[in-house]
Length: 197
Image (cartoon, rainbow, N blue to C red; front, side):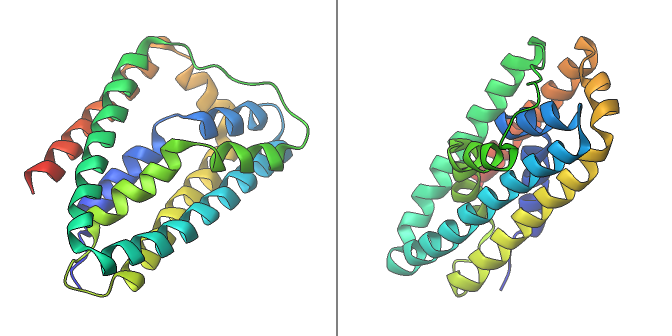
């Protein structure tokens, strides 16, 4: 089984650090309360686990039933990665909106992640690109989904305790602009790489 670990992990790390709805929700709570930040992150991770299970079952069935469908998913995924990249570059000058602390933070984190098309498409676009078409799809999809959840979990473990410092850093317009432009350019490059292969 030859999984494309290098490109998969590079893309996953970039996607993980690009601020999105989950990031804003967790940061908004963590900046003001460590406990609320942890609750929000746990809700987001629970949603991520649901996406992982659905992606594992769905992708495995898709690849087993129609290997050519994998190519279509890859092409759509590459387009989506490029779209996220361009959107990230466009949004680079916008200020980061930090939400105030919420009630039912775990539930809000769960729903924020479950209803976020970016998360669903991350699983459906990223995982197929790394899979070996000549190997059994279910173990690969399960492994790659587990790694995806693990990377996000590590990200939240590192982010939540340092939320106050990170919020100040990304609150600086120049720093945020450079950060998001680098992330956006990296995503576009990864999309081009997927199409090239």
